[in-house]
Length: 258
Ligand SMILES: N[C@H](CCC[C@H](N)C(=O)O)C(=O)O
Image (cartoon, rainbow, N blue to C red; front, side, top):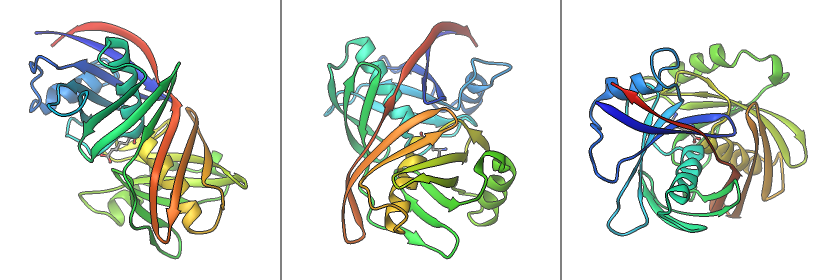
């Protein structure tokens, strides 16, 4: 079988994207998805995304982690898929699409995609960390000297230690200024550090606001792969109108035989 694919990246979080509007992609073939995401034997990516038809919105997003299993929401992947739908001519500069965690609205301005994320009703605050769900589960923990922190090792320890088999993504954070944070993320499903995680930086922004580290409702995050901006409104413990904004870029396209 030959498969046409596109490769996108959003702040260094990279994805194989396939136009599956004809419905031909074998979605249950976990090994095939893992193979396409393999950086040595396949194309190489943190995840694989299918663009599919949706009866009530512009398109449907189906996301798989690099291990081949269908994942929860992916913020950077969602932004990349919006750029891809725009590239295909499926949408103009604005869209509403369906994903595993519900409807998402997004706007495009050049390479920049601004994606509306799910509302967050609860931030669980523990003495050393926060836990919240921004479409995917996220552990948020402040550390010192983030640059030299062993993210793969400490991330794996917490991912399996606290959260067990279902797991969580683990974000390590260092505050830079009143409204700016540096973040490195260990991603479940990749089981390693990625260069950026969209639902992760969104979780960081909300957790830092909830714990009083920032009063700003527009939070800037620096990841190893680039910069993202998160904005939101807040009432009591609930966060609404949550937006994630940053670049989403097509890197190359190709055909892989598998
Ligand atoms: N990289 C993604 C998160 C993927 C979530 C996945 N690792 C899981 O929890 O299943 C993002 O930009 O939001």
